Amino acid sequence: MKTALLFSNIKKHITLSEEEKAHFQSLLREDYLVKKKLLLSQGEPCNYIYFVNSGILRAFYLSPEGKESTIMFAAQDWWITDMYCFLNELPAMVTIQVVENCSMLKLSKKGLDSLYEDIPQFNKLFRILMQNSYCREQLRTIQNLSLPAKERYHRFLEKYPHIASKVTLKQIASYLGITPEFLSAIRGK
Amino acid sequence: MKTALLFSNIKKHITLSEEEKAHFQSLLREDYLVKKKLLLSQGEPCNYIYFVNSGILRAFYLSPEGKESTIMFAAQDWWITDMYCFLNELPAMVTIQVVENCSMLKLSKKGLDSLYEDIPQFNKLFRILMQNSYCREQLRTIQNLSLPAKERYHRFLEKYPHIASKVTLKQIASYLGITPEFLSAIRGK
DNA sequence: CCCATATCTTAATCTACCTTATTTTTATTG
DNA sequence: CAATAAAAATAAGGTAGATTAAGATATGGG
Figure (tube, rainbow over the protein chains, first blue to last red):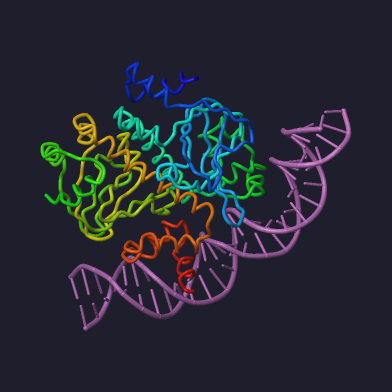
């Protein structure tokens, strides 16, 4: 199982013994999915959180009117799931789709809960991950409220150049909250 | 010091001994501020996180063009700060203003860090708080992207009726990302 | 109680961004 | 390498929401 990247990331925040690492690893499952496959579909149970070893994923919400809104992209090093539904064991509100062939490690809700019990340090790890996610999301809210579309697009390019170059214009537009036509117009300058 | 509300909230997630409670309490300071006062100003150091005992607060970002965007409101039971700048010890990006006379408990960054060291359970507590904040913020992003202003306004009224009745139309408009004039037009139906 | 100032409303005009439609370009697959 | 589909660009008309400005209604301090 490819756990090197995951462990090196965890090491930045907590220190695990060899037994703890082994226990953690026993709760993980490796998962590979090719482009366009769905990791999670709206309405289905959301039992896992995924750590991305490689590839790119996209989480989006499909409104009753049929409009897609991209909630987030995830690349190497990122964790992704429908967090609210995962934590509360509710049917997923969002769909998660593979944008570029993915290698991932998945951890179940039960697995995570047992980690919190058995290795309390995981509370610290996930506190930090949640802090980062919250701050990132709050910054996005600020930018959505205060900046025009053109500016939001340029910030996106700066912040996520490796993602911007791999996903479609349509997907970026739905992340920014504008139509592909309008983003195309912005680009044409 | 009025810690009853805070302790009863914490109790939902972790269990503290009397000594731990006392230690925690020793790191808290009581703070009272009247309407219109600022808890934190953009550009200043953001050394504290605040727990609201009573009253209402508003955090907003002031853009270089002079436009205010309301990031969040906070009422009884809520924690508030400029999370990103608090955690990274950076000058505040947002201003926090008192909307209704406030009684609060404040905890410094150093105090919080020492709590994580001395009482590891605080990692669990703040993991849960951060999870909730992240999920709330993500839901807001989804709604900002997928719903028109009128619908966002009605969701806001449903979700935060006690806040909606205490803050100005202008402040609600800046939370929803629209002008007060347009919100007034929405109301007039 | 009155004046000053902020807040809210209404309405006309304006614009950033949407919708629909057509064409061109780029991927995908047999 | 066609064949087909999907994505992107372009363009015209349309709308949600912004801007400006003026009047109506609070709110609060002296």
